Length: 156
Length: 153
Image (cartoon, rainbow over all chains, first blue to last red; front, top):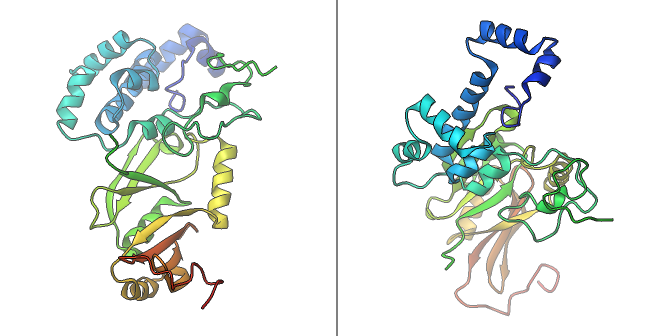
């Protein structure tokens, strides 16, 4: 959970991995950490969102998805509960007029990570880099098994 | 309208060492050095720039995951280590003086200052192996000078 905090995590799978039933896992987790796994994960994700809001020029929606929330509403509500501010209010407070220091494309590339899939033979389309050398290219997902087919080129 | 180039990526093999090289040997200033995220999953945003040119910075990036897939990261590291990546041209108004000064600080030159049609040019490598041209440009082209070391003396 500390490592894959940005990924969609399945509580049953995590519990099974630990060798516990779902409910026993939640109880044991809460006993050890003082919060449920869900609360813990949310806290970690909000911490990262704070960091990105301060340092990178990404939109709130982009940050929401980078840190692992699927709904902007849930993100904003959780963010406000933890920090007392909305994401954009937080950004205004900490960043003010000055520009964020890290261009969003770099933050997206490194922080969000590239899809951890084996690159196909046609992985990189030359010249399609959006921002920097090594930007993620949509074509790199084309042949990955189990990919969501976002940019499938139907190579066959 | 595009107003100019503001950030250029230089692939380096070790950010701590590169930071030291670019500041202590080349005399650049650190513009930003911050980390977001943690451990191997985070990124360190390290930029340096020439003191006289506040609007341009180099970002010293390590080819690594998660920004790059392992194969691409390895390929880039190999190219950097082989020394085939030329990362740009630095200009000066005192090529001979700066050449001596940089050399005294341990910068590895692969060509001493030579007269070229466009100016006087030396070449050096950074501590990762990237090569840079180091040039004092001429006001006007002087075609009596050779284009490279091979054409004439």
